[in-house]
Amino acid sequence: MTTTYAVLSEGLQKRYGDVHALRGLDLAVPEGTVCGVLGPNGAGKTTAVRVLTTLVSPDSGSARVAGCDVVRDPAGVRERIAVTGQYASVDGDLTGAENLRLFARLLRAPRSRADELLERFGLTGAANRPARTYSGGMRRRLDLAASLIVRPRVLFLDEPTTGLDPRSRNEIWDAVRGLAGQGTTVLLTTQYLEEADRLADDIVVIDEGRAAHRGTPAELKALIGHYAEVVVADPAQLEAAAAVLDRLTGSAPALDAEARTVGAVTTDSTLTLPRIVREADAAGVHLIDASLRPPTLDEVFLRLTGRAAAPTHDDRHATQKENAA
Image 1: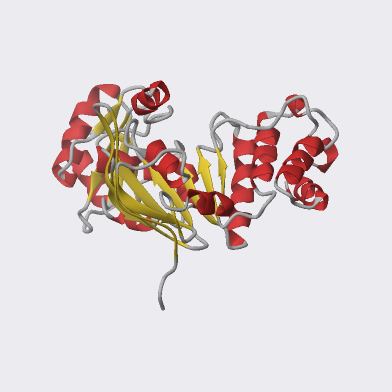
Image 2 (image 1 turned 90 degrees about the vertical axis):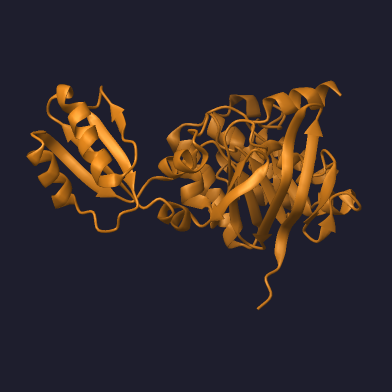
């Protein structure tokens, strides 16, 4: 079977003055899947989205979205996509219903589409309230609904749940799963690695403007094996516990004095929890807990990029230069 790609880029390059935002970015997102795009600050995530949504042109390389070239046929791309950014684009003075009906009128969609989306996103009860009275989660759902007035083939979500509480975040996740289940391709950039872990069929880790790693969440986790962690009874024994894990795992342990924990990644498939406990006991380290588990996506991200996922928007310098141009 031949895979059809909703998003396909090869060698994308983009500079903003002395900032090299994209350095030959390759992406291949199959139709009907959710692709999570991760990366540390300045990695190029937002620049990639801006190129793929035709907001800026690449300096070189090529990209096709929903079958249309982003440079040669930007209008064709825009007809087939929808974009939901970090901040809601709805008018706070209009009601939820008025916002969606306005979008429907502008996009020449039937009025019934607005009512259908209000119900679909659980906003019918608040349809006649000004959007400014909505909670953060409700505004994000309204914003997402506005993006779907005309059913897009590809939906770009740029950090869609930034600043939301866990309940609101789950509501957005449910909506995204529903869209993917109906065949919409979703490209998701996020600062929450749990979000990518829960939603993405595939993940692309962008670092220094390139696709440094890609795979399913399980495949990326398998790259670094397991995570061994112990909790010591006496904080004075943290260094001794770290020496034990260093010897057993062959990687530098991370210490948390407040939580009294020491953890380290291991690719040794023969390492067992009883062995960790025995070695700690032999070293005179008193443990109150120990675990050996698959790594979280946060731990994978830290290992692959050498940096933790930052809770701020990336490409800041590139965007500033672009806005000044």
